Every structure is written in structure tokens, then in C-alpha cells.
Image (cartoon, rainbow, N blue to C red; front, side):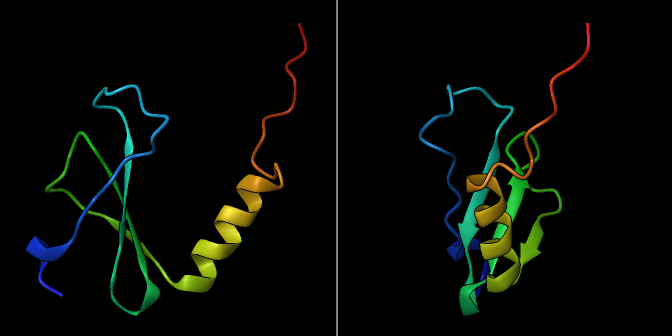
Length: 70
């Protein structure tokens, strides 16, 4: 896949700022993730099973911070 063919997108919950994570659907079911502030910089690439595990963890609350003690 040519890098020019990749379509990156942000969450619909983004407020239009430049501090966002962008995602792209890649060949073979892989998923690319990059920093919107650095679109020509490196991107992480996840296999389908890795992306599925990550998104399942988000939905299940696995990445929520514990409450801070005052």
C-alpha cells in the first residue's frame, strides 16, 4: 500500500485541536496509529488481533486510572 493511499482519521469526539491520535485502516486488517501533531513522523502498526485486544480493553475499562487519594 502506498503511503499516499492511506486515509487517517480522528475520533468524532475530537475537539478539532492538534493533539489527537489518528488511526488508519491498513492492508491485511492492520491498523496504523499516529500523532496528529507529527503526521510525517513514525506510526505504530498493530495486527488485527492486537487492535482487537486493545479496543476490547478500552471498552472493558482496563485502562481507567484508579482514583487518586487526596
